[in-house]
Image 1 (cartoon, one colour):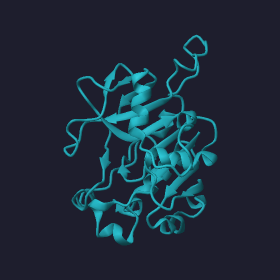
Image 2 (image 1 turned 120 degrees about the horizontal axis):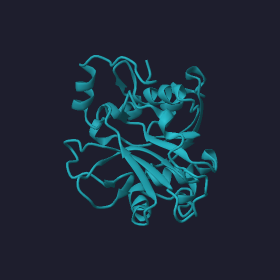
Image 3 (image 1 turned 90 degrees about the vertical axis):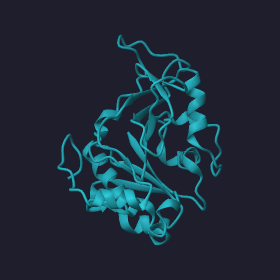
Length: 243
């Protein structure tokens, strides 16, 4: 399995820090946000990583190089202007291949997430080995989290392991998901496109699965959040998390 880390955002709410440093390179508990992801991906055996970038992207390439210092193989998908998440995937399709891939935002902090769990969430067959028809199988698997204070209304419902557009309670999309690449076929390379509307189409068809992740998770969106994380002790490694 390959992974894509979204790193093209401008990070407006983190200014002035992000005027001179891309948001995924901001340091949390001793290392850049994006490096937490890379180390945890490698621990799970996911070593082929694609990173898109736009704002100050040359700094990301200089800092991470080809990934060999982390045991990874990193390929970059530069964007002149940020294309949003679905647009970023479409631009990087030639690097991602034809198999399901993991995608995660470069500005979230989830040090305990075990990426080993994502490898088999999109099954092509039922428990008896019978293949699913293409219009019945899940095309995406989303990891949802409890609604943070800045997003109390949430994004999606969840019935068993099926994500719904409605429902109560509602959960927030944790910006971690596994996707079949063909769902991005309708987006041209270089086109600006958000992921949310695309997902909702497949959710309406009953083709998106998901689960709630209850481990430590932060969307590091403000300087205050960054400072709060950095005044607490770095967590001890567990469940394959980076250390």
